[in-house]
Length: 181
Image (tube, rainbow, N blue to C red; front, side, top):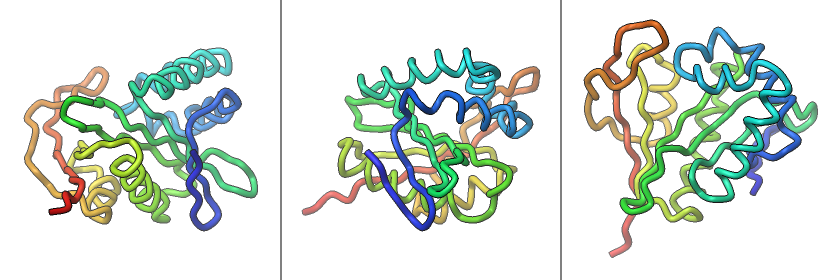
């Protein structure tokens, strides 16, 4: 599965991505340590990234978690990671989590990616509800949710605890599949 837009492509994680994911995580460690601590710690070395990618490929195949990479077409540089996680197949619901390289932040790449992957998840994966859970101070992620037509639902009290910090209230946004009548 590959989705293309402008000079970028979104594709399912694969075995050849380990080095690129390691490079992305190390280069963006300050950005990842608060909201993606597990992804960061599992990708601090190429060997750790190989294990991480093998696990994520298996989870993709078993439809447990879907990890996508966002890469520049020309250089093949990885500039973003996008998860569809916390999948509840009974209720046909999944949650997006995403991170973008500091070099391309603010260029609308994640908005475009989440828009395309929302359509993919609703049409091809059979999900009916997609969620984005974000801290209100993460203005970029709030804009992604709003620009992709996700609706603010409610504040989730003490929803997330960053490593070594107090718990945070998070904002829940949802997007629903249109039901044809």
